[in-house]
Amino acid sequence: MSIAWLSPQIILMSLSEVFAIIASMEFIYLEAPQYMKSFAMGIYFFIQTIGDTIAILLVLIVKYVTLLPELGGPWICNNLNHGKIAYFFELLMVLMIANMICLWHYSKRFRPGYYDIRFRVQERF
Image 1 (cartoon, helix red, strand yellow):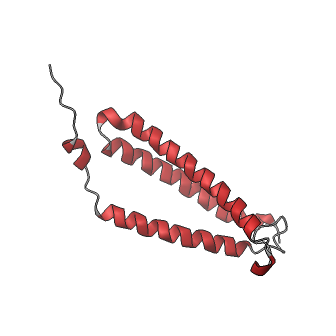
Image 2 (cartoon, one colour):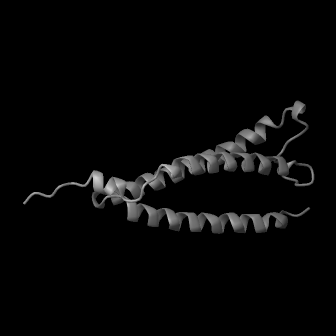
Image 3 (tube, helix red, strand yellow):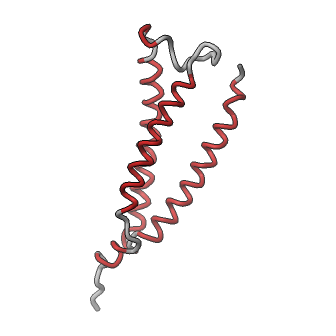
């Protein structure tokens, strides 16, 4: 099996990340108070960096934990014919579903424009 089989998944994940970044930036510029826009973008990119670091750590952890003989062999290896990469993608699916449930829970409580009105800085002249 060739690594080319993963190309559609990688392309779709890259496109989804581009669309997520654009939507996140628009959301921050619409909802953040005027005096917090730069800080909010900085926090967003910082959290994005932490997420990327966690993704790298997740790959390394799964790679070394699944080397144990009790788990039936490595999930991630150099040869796709010998690895069980489908298990890794199933793990990612479970994590994404958990993330979607958390996002749904917090989005129910969101009210557009609430923080801009409540915490607006009063200008005094």
